[in-house]
Length: 237
Image 1: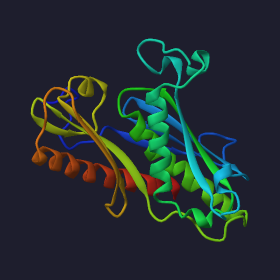
Image 2: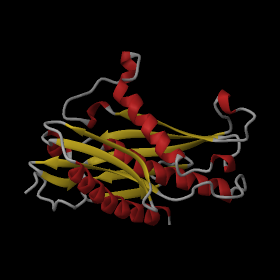
Image 3: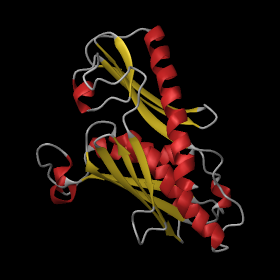
Image 4: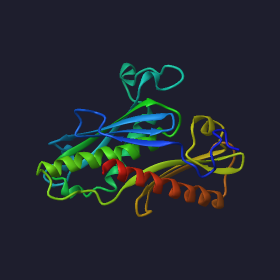
């Protein structure tokens, strides 16, 4: 039995609360068990310099963890004066994942910034940020359409992310921290509603794993992502 006592293919209790942030153009509180991430979308009528004159928009993300999101206090990165490599990696992953399902030519020359703040961390924060970030983005784009600032919805389909891992030889879905900390391998998958793969990150922590085990992890991720995308649809109406 896995440490969380869940079935091997069972997600944690997932809740996607739409528009918890009053002033953001779109927002979502993504709860994956005890991992809680607040995702807020901001529409900016400007774009990065490298896109000026192209007619293309941009979707980007920023990621951060509150000091007491973890068991022991983590110093704010602003105090240290620089972001960690982990933070930069995660926010780039979030941005790539959301751009993969966005027709940027339909955005016009505007940028949507998704701020993902981890309120509480119990494993899988990047996956919760991507899944909730999509909801925030979808709600912001709907608002732009309602205001007449967009003629067509730039989103092509949903996108969600979920973690998987191998623990004591068993492949399992959606690891919490206790499971991830003792897993022999862990992976993160970003998948679209149609089953296309945006990104796969997998690494051995104890010993190498086989291609058959990787296929099992992918199958678990596909099942989990399908459920998450259903929840996204409910959250966005």
